[in-house]
Each structure stands twice: as structure tokens, then as C-alpha cells.
Image (cartoon, rainbow, N blue to C red):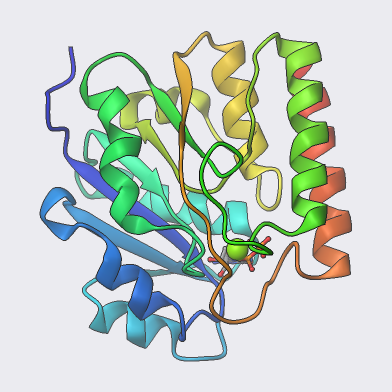
Amino acid sequence: MPPESPSIDVVIPAYNEEASLPLVLAAIPRALVSRVVVVDNNSTDATSEVAAAGGAQVVKEPQPGYGSACLAGLAYIRRHQPADVVVFLDGDFSDHPEELPSLVAPIGEGDFDLVIGSRVLGSRQPGALLPQARAGNFIACRMIRALYGHRFTDLGPFRAISWSALESLEMSDPDFGWTAEMQVKALRQGLRVTEVPVSYRKRVGVSKITGTLRGTILAGYKILWTVLRYSTA
Ligand SMILES: Nc1nc2c(ncn2[C@@H]2O[C@H](COP(=O)(O)OP(=O)(O)O)[C@@H](O)[C@H]2O)c(=O)[nH]1
Ligand SMILES: [Mg+2]
């Protein structure tokens, strides 16, 4: 039985997010969080500096990619006394960090191992979730349902997972397959997964993934491939 109020590490992958990161860091309910790790992949702006000024532990990862950044954050945590739960959060201020308690609650109550913040179930500012992201999510969730028999509504980045469950997943995706990999591996391993609604607003600064044609194509391809790949593993 996990404790009622688990200790929490927050991992934020960030690439050129100097404008949004201070807002993200200020909105995290710090009293509930042991440590915030910002993973910077060769940003050319002041991402690392604003992260440190906002009280985060800065980890630098030369290998580019969303998954590589998350892996580097986890490697750091593994070496420095992991908390009970890891919360992943983007650095763009699209998510509402103050909603962290509702993400962690199902784990703290001992009922679940992985909790996905669903932007589809939550309230979205018009235009916040781009049409290509909505379509990609929908297709990926349909495929997951067909291949794994579980109904997700989103592959959102704001999520909570117990450290022990996360370690058992042996995450490996270096880029856009990261979120899907976590969800399908959790299903394959029979982890207890659920979703809670989260709010979503337009990001501060420039999109690196679904706001670009290249990012959309690469992410769409990689996510669907990841869903397929682990279905036969
Ligand atoms: N460290 C790191 N962070 C990244 C990389 N690509 C995107 N991010 C971060 O991942 C999050 C999501 O990216 P974003 O540009 O918002 O993509 P979108 O939500 O699809 O528009 C943001 O916090 C980005 O700074 C990367 O290569 N390395
Ligand atoms: Mg974003």
C-alpha cells in the first residue's frame, strides 16, 4: 500500500522555453513536490537559467528528443533518491500545473499505477489542442483499444506514475513515441491505469512538435508505430 501523500518528483522536458518555464514553475504546487527536474536539450535561449532561477534542478541532455530528455531526467532521479511518484509536465504552459493533486490522487489512494491527464475529458481553451493533435490522438486511442482492449481518450503529456511502475516499464523511446510507449507498455504489463480530466490552454512561445509539419508527421508516424510494435511484443 503506497502512502496517502506520496512524495513527488516532477520532470519537465524543455527546449527553448525561456518564456513559458517561469510560469510553469511558479504554478507547480511546490509544497507537495520534492523536486522539479528540467531537462534541457541544447536550448539556445535562457531555458537552463530560468529553470534554475525558478528552483528547478537542471539536467542537460545533449541527445535531442522529447523521450531522450525524459530518460535523462529519470536517470538523474535514479541516482538521487527517487520519490514515490513521477509527474511529467511540458514546459510550454499549456497544462495547468496546479491540477497536479488530482493527477496524483488515484496513485496516493493506492488504486492506480499510471494516471493520464486527459485534455479530451477536460476543458480546453479553443484552439489549444491543434486539429492534427486531436486527430492523431483519436486514431492512436482507437488503435490502442483495438489492439490492447483499453479505452484511453488522450496521449497527453501531463501524467503521473509511481516510480516502481515506471521502472518496470523500462522506457526507451528517444523522441515522439514516449507517451504512447508508456501507455501501451503499462497495458501489456497489466498495470492499473486511469485518466483524469485536465485543462489545456494555448502554449506560451513556439510549438516544437504538433505546431510544425515535420513534428506532426514524425510524431504521428512514431506514435502509431509504437502502438503497433508493442502489441506483438
Ligand atoms: N528537452 C526537450 N524538450 C523538448 C524537445 N522537443 C519538445 N520539447 C518540449 O516538449 C514539450 C512539448 O513540446 P511542444 O513544442 O509544446 O509540442 P506540442 O505540444 O506538440 O506543440 C515542451 O515543453 C517542449 O519544450 C526536445 O527535443 N528536447
Ligand atoms: Mg505543447
